Image (tube, rainbow, N blue to C red; front, side):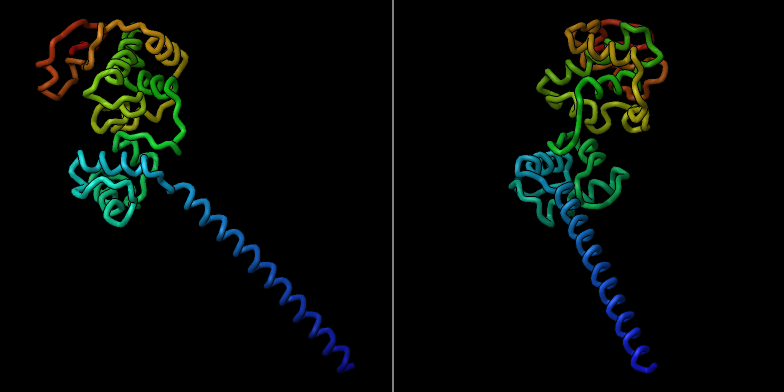
Amino acid sequence: MLKNICRLDNIFVAIALILITLFLVVMSSTFVKDVRSLSKVFAYTESETIQIQQSLKELGYFDEEVTGYYGNITRQAVKDFQYDYGLSVTGEVDGATASALGIHLGSQQSNDLYILAKCIYAEARGEVYEGQVAVGAVVLNRVASPDFPNTIYGVVYQPWAFTSVSDGQMNLEPNGSAYQAAQDAINGWDPTYGCLYYYNPAVATSSWIFDRTTVVTIGNHVFAI
């Protein structure tokens, strides 16, 4: 009887050891997978790091030489920037941080038509159709100008460029009219005749905008150069 009990104890111990071993193997595999995933998310190429450092330098957060190496100094500069801009302070350049820096990293998924449609919907969904196209044309005129970022993504997410980005309206999904207006603007329709700025005089608060030369008024927006 005692011998049988000992055998059962040994079986239970063996089963327990097997289960513990399997658990540790699974957990180890998951941990490694998670680490690899994180490494992939926040792995920057040299050119991407140069973009990050240059943008931080222009904004006064990076005083060192632009090297393309993402080390502790760059990470701290990113943290300082994130803190000042109300972003999650991680030291890593996620989508929100890249947007605030006005840069586009290759790991981010973007679509010019989609981003432009989102901007048009956020900025001009209550305007006449020509006014929606005009807002899209301003974005494209900035892309073509040496004074602004050279991509639609960079222009739209340039810090403080569009109120709809800072107040969250850019997170709204565009409707069919916004998509069509974006496509018409991309196809070359420019009702603004090359304008780089627009504003609603009824709600505009930045005094400098009133000093720009007015070209045309469409709906509620004044378009200027």
